[in-house]
Length: 68
Image 1 (cartoon, rainbow, N blue to C red):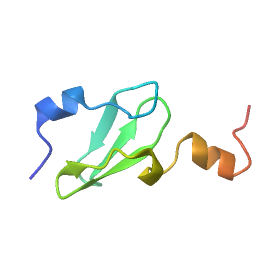
Image 2: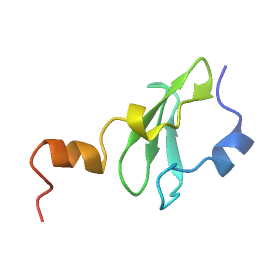
Image 3: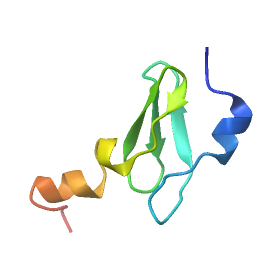
């Protein structure tokens, strides 16, 4: 079962910028179009918790910062 297209239209990154998310049905992930965080979809339920996301600004900081 895939995520409902209407749900995908209203989902947004839980960070303060609330950017749209791109859905990868095969990988079962949602990726923020602004910060790059990757959120898992478990049992057809998006897990939009910043603490459980992969990538994004916190991952850049852990690697020594971004290349600015």
